[in-house]
Length: 204
Image (cartoon, one colour):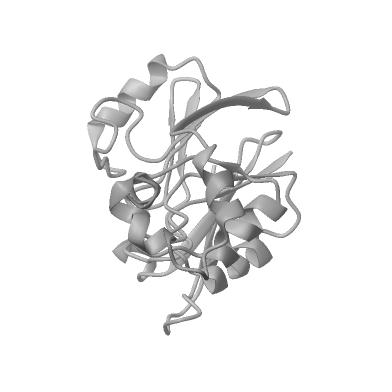
């Protein structure tokens, strides 16, 4: 199976659509949170996630906008309240099985404190070997990563909406995990709202 993984779209519908185009045909789509901003909603982004029947978790930005702090932003008549209700049903941590593979997805850290930033070079990721999953999907840092620790594959697709990773020239990115071959393919591409040079890479 080809599992598409995105994160940190941050209301960038053009970046989201470009990522889907780059990934091509996939069997499942996972979104590791922060599909919107903490004080700005996107009917287009959330609507497309729902239309695609994506597996979605909440990030720190959803946590804010769905709280009392976000009431003013969500009170706009332009906000589709059905989509807000749909997002409210999503968890902060998801455990599921796809194609015989056990997957856990959360937005930031798999360990407490849950909102901690853990970048690819940090040794803490070695602790993932203790998980009883085949793969762990995270986001939050906007830095792409594919690392295997023991039998556990940790994937951060980077950001499909707000590029911050200097290692790919501050481009947007998403990932596809082939559950049969074990390959993780990253797709780096220019933010349609900015001007970058695109390229793609392959990690095994």
